[in-house]
Image (cartoon, rainbow, N blue to C red; front, top):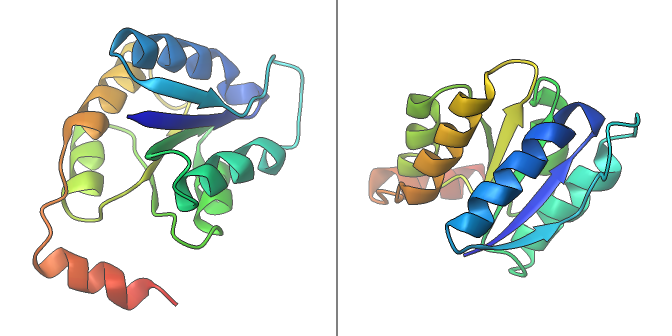
Amino acid sequence: MKISLGSDHAGFRYKEKIKELLLSLGHEVKDFGTSSEEPVDYPKFIRPAAEAVASGECDRGIVLGGSGNGEAIAANKVRGVRCALCWNEETARLSRQHNDANVLSLGERMIPEDLALQIVRVWLTTDFEGGRHIQRIAQLEP
């Protein structure tokens, strides 16, 4: 799978750990930054990561920040993106099974690193169930 990554300064450390994990699992990564813990304006990095998913350049995306809330909001402004803010394995699993989330948002200040990595693993390996959920998602698209 080709996965886009984007973070602000508050999510930079986890972004780098997640990138290592993705590469070790055989995924291709397109990193849209940021490249340090120096303060930045997160939409400059989140929007391109989300657009890469919406355009089909990447299969899925992962965005990160301090809480993950702003990043999820920014990603969801891109038509065709279904970004889910997840904080445990169950929210990750359900975001894929029921919502076909194609972008994952994580908050580095909200969850421990080992949990963040496990959330990524679950999110990557959970399939969309389809069926009745696909009708709900289609109704949400403008």
